[in-house]
Length: 464
Image (cartoon, rainbow, N blue to C red; front, side):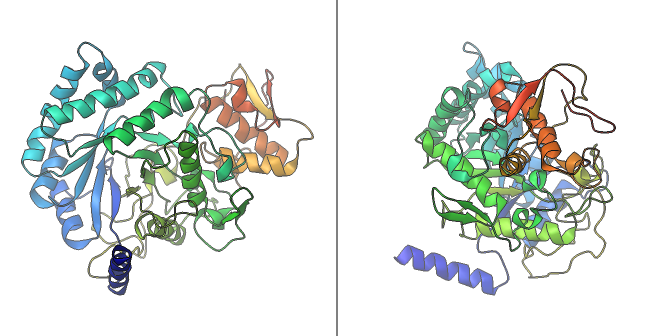
């Protein structure tokens, strides 16, 4: 009982000081031409905020040395390029290659004070874009990297890899029905979870309710009051899409016998600006989503199936990145401006300041959503004529967790005709294409069918 009382007392003290009970991590990208120096960033985070970890998208020595010199208490997650993994997976030379990479990219910086605690083997190897050689190489590479870290005297550095939520099989969006995709479950993810269990490293997922929301479920996506989604198997009511996504991952892990493996959130965020006419995007929506996520992940709230748990989490993103391509939203996920003023109040400043820039700058983004090529021959997935409307809406809610659903939102090229049959067909096809065009990826509980006739019309182009 004493540890619980101590935890509650600590949380209460932190709340009284205006700070989150536990710190949070941030993704620190630099695809921009207006950002402060890495040294200034490290100093600001360490001295002025409750941010206690950063996730880097490479092993940039300038960034590592900046944190070593100015923020040795901040934990760092370092990313390895996808293309490097096949070399580490080689049975004959893989371990030597991994040791060489650790020596060349980590060891000296750690010796100078960089607090590297996670090494990320690539990013989203299992989809939405799948390169078979990388899928085969992923787990062997992770094992070699873990061995290399031990042999090079860095046992404190854990190894994991970020996944997109499409590692889950299609379902109705009810967490208790979740499972990992066939072909990935027992052959890839079960042995990977065994690796995480043996090494004490987390399964890392990139959870983005932003890529699944629409005008109807906006409140559900950003932690605002709503009726919720009821799970009849667990008798739990979900009023947060993020909670449902996390519990779906947990359920799938538990079905493979690894419910005790920790879950980390590699990326999650909400933009402050998007294309004209897109509802649900702005500083208030971004604040509500990120504040709700921090309560779940760092405040000890946990999820309905994992109450009281905390999750190592990295908000996307520290700054807007004005050089990113794609939609406006892709450049506007930042929580701080380049002058270190907050774009909106998340309570992350140590002085308790809630001042936020009144005019958030336009343009950033997280991991871009899948961007398949336009239609042009092949196979497509469509909703069956006469399929139950409720089931089709569940298909939309589920698939939008993994693909870009903006085309079916108001103003999008596929918004009209504005009915569930048409919207479901577009989204089900996008999911089917992104996951490799397997017949089972178009099943959707019997409501999908594969066709060889291109369903594109007017300005609405179905990917293929």
